Length: 197
Image (cartoon, rainbow, N blue to C red):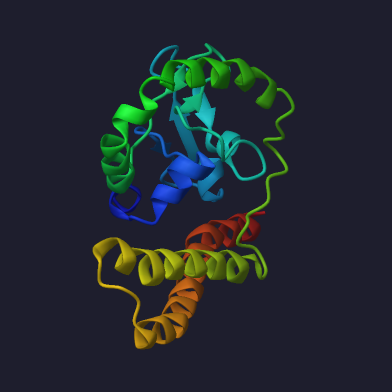
């Protein structure tokens, strides 16, 4: 949760992709399930405990700009906001505030259809086999663009050749490290489950 709040790269996930993290998550401690399977997300309005699989990449991980939609009561589950997202939205407040209510109503009308044909049983771990490399390299590429190319321009430093060149191996290794860490975190429970079965 702290990572979600302080990582500036996640502004892209929140604002562009609409990927969100709920403020409250209940996680089974002694379970051999994957992280998403053992995560339950309570709706503060109706009390329904939703499976974390409901917001997996196979189902509805994206387009959750206004929060996570509760398909039981039709209200939104509050989510954390990234610090960079908060700052960006605060600075651009005078531009988007006039359209927010209309956008939210349009978004709410589309939500019931998104939750009709969900498959909560056959959700695969995106980090299985070599999926972790692809996801890690994508993360590394995004961080390279954001940290090496965009931040220096925003700060007024300008681009330097050695930072651009040095950033390639750094963020490639960082991306692979991130992907492998995610594989370890998400894969260890699958191994436990297979041993039990």
